[in-house]
Amino acid sequence: MGKNFSIEIDLAKKAAYAAGKLLVENKADLNITSSSDPRDTKLKADVSSENLIKKIIKKGSSYEVLAEESGKTSNNLGDTFWVIDPLDGTANYNRNIPICCISIGMVVSLKPVFGVIYDFNNNEIYVGDNSNNSATLNDVPISVSNVDQKNKGILVTGLPFKTDYSDIALDKLISDMQTWKKTRMIGSAAIASCYIASGRAEMYKENGIFLWDIVAGAAIVEAAGGSAEIMNMKDNFQVDVIFSNKKIKD
Image 1 (cartoon, rainbow, N blue to C red):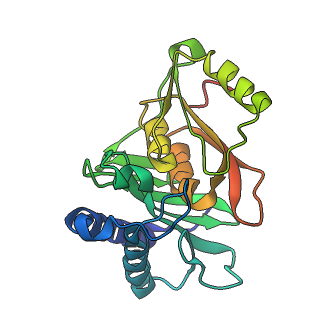
Image 2 (cartoon, rainbow, N blue to C red):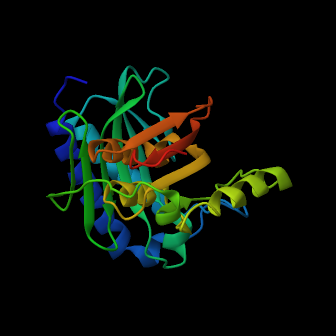
């Protein structure tokens, strides 16, 4: 990747901490539904967090931004741009399930180069920098697990908003789950990525997730010694992903 992104990483950490503080301290005001879609929870929290993150980033960076709520800051994002999910795990936040976070990453030629994920409920900040293969949790180095068999490993997966619920798709999902020791669905792609990077689970995979959900996590997984495959990107930035510890193949 070449370029050093230490300035941008520091900026992302600053923005993540500020947004996390906002989401915790103002939850009573922000935990208000702003969208009526029956299955895709949108809150005032998502927009407020995104506005704050973008404000902080724009003060210190001239790169364009792709963000979940507001989309692209320019029709031409360029080769290098920010990718922001201001609140991953919105439904969890809404119902006081403490598995949600802020996810800020950057891509060069659509390849994740760094990621910052702030699990504000647990005050855990994950940082992955692919320019020097450095991955940390609260500044302590992390790495993927050494588990090399599915029947000893944990799979993290999910059923995103537009999941295929056909019998064929569900049969395939269940048969895959049965090859693992345990399967978890936690409701946050970014936190799932962090669990792979820190050795808490061996594989995370999901189809139809969005780029902003997984860019930061992909960088952290790779920097921690894992593999992050991002495939089949559509025009709306929907993707399929398989993140793993590299020791277990799908």
